[in-house]
Length: 383
Length: 136
Image 1 (tube, each protein chain N blue to C red):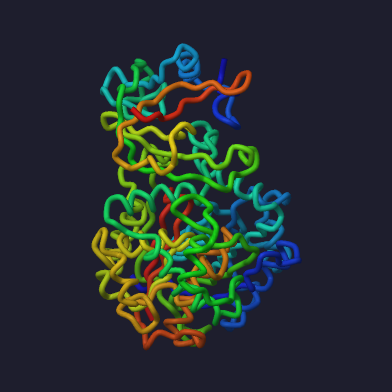
Image 2 (cartoon, chains in turn cyan, green):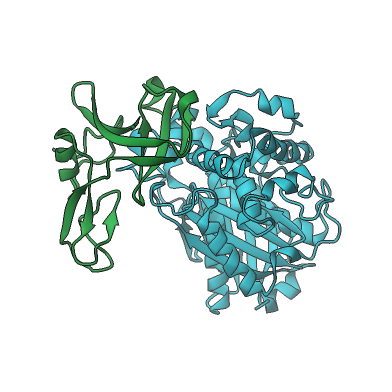
């Protein structure tokens, strides 16, 4: 199935406040992706713009972005699954190319979260839950993940300190990433002593809202081989959903949508979890990375903590995870995040991840989650 | 009355399930079951997408349930700033899971997953109505 490739990847600097408008923000990612490939704007057959719409006054941003990047008159449209929007965009791009309809498709993710203040953003994110039955109680995105954290602790004995160790790891890589919002190392003590936001999660268990953009350019095999040095092949994809309501979840110690998506992706790629050389997982909170270890089969349910206790998810460990700092240190500009994760894995597989290159990886994985496990996308890439 | 006064900030007014609010006013937390296939729902639904039927019946949620998980929110979003800290939870009532808040009368240190709870309608202010979990 190795016949759709990623030929170009880019992202803007992620920052608390970018100080530019959304079209200018998208340009930064587009420019970096286009520098990877020997094609012109007119060779892009379609563009898919991905973001969570409630942050912008601009309606239907895909039209605006395609004008600014000079991608008109080619088709442009918008895809949204909140925090996993840009990997959903990638899934659609793959289908467009696989069907033969298009040869080259650009997936552009962005979010300018600084358009809203922090409480307003929390309210918008809270409305990413069931607005009739759950938002009226004051649910928040961190609150939803905290419910999983508490249940994981009660079921398996996971501790706050074990979660904090995940942040220590990711902060150590974020400190080296010139595109990260948070470029400082953190000690276990810094994290353990940070202010509670929603028990048992504290300030440093959480990623920061950020402004940012990402761009992934995909192409059919015949084009890919001629326009870039190292095409990275889409070997497997999985996507699944779970209930919008927290009350509807059958599992509260793992994300069923991620488990389902992972199973599909491994099957499509014909590989097992042990074959993954490097992974990017959706660590919007420390607990989210721990759940991912288990949902992706890197560890048995309840045993994910061993991976972090034994430093196995560092760049020189058994399964390096989020060695670019993760969402925790990069920041999480909702619509741009999945594309940024894909960029990291592509750079790793090309051997270009100078800040924290894993030794000679051949197969990489991206795990990108929308909402508190409402949408799950898993993508497996191969050199 | 519809859902305009449900919870702290309501984002919904009209719904076919408005009887839920009427029952709350009467002191009962009720939900629905499809009469055809017997599937019970929470939150209540007036339609059964499996049977493509809308013949449902209301029933009262079990007296006692078990707390599944909880979190105490210290940073409330817009509209909830003044209520923080408040504790959100999921409780299981005979296999039916309900999301809501734990009563402020319960100290966070006394909350443990697995503890027995009941779900009780509560009124606040002039008009607001909701339900909360209380320790049994």
